Length: 219
Image (cartoon, rainbow, N blue to C red; front, side, top):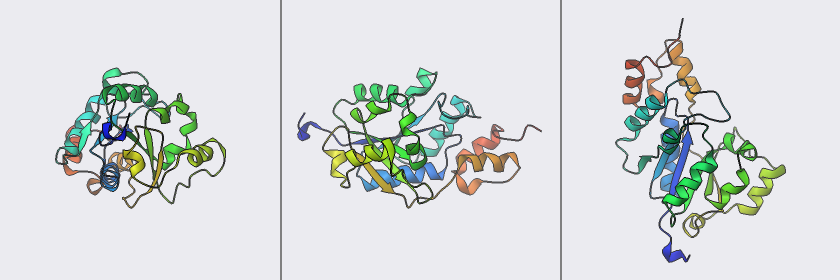
């Protein structure tokens, strides 16, 4: 395939989004604008493989996502993992997306913490055949300098955004975030303690959480 046949790249940000918050949204917007990506699609998982079951149901997390992105036209939701159910393996999702977007570079956004566990992912060695990786780096999470991940980075890292536009997959960009650092765990804990985390997530998402009594203490 020639570069003239390749369409503008799309980014994907997966997660539990339990709940979606300003940290997720600011990372997505910063990366979308930094690399001139067509859009960012959020992929809520059904059941994460490497972490506990989300507290909110898939339906509730999907509804909160819809509320959070409704005013940003470059944000979309890809609900294939919710529809597929079962354990959410990234490789299965990327195979589905590659069939859906055969001429589009796919850019998978990973937090630096997720990158440190990348070599434990199901068929991780095949992921770069299907997508580019954009590692959202923070000073608090230094990237590994030895081992499989360091070797992958040495082989595939590019520093020019054109690398995401000129090929369908195979490159890694390390993006140093200026976005705010917010944790969904902190939000859930604050709600369980009866505290107000409304500055950490969109107002309509917080109103949904209150209306549906999500994350409240069971005492």
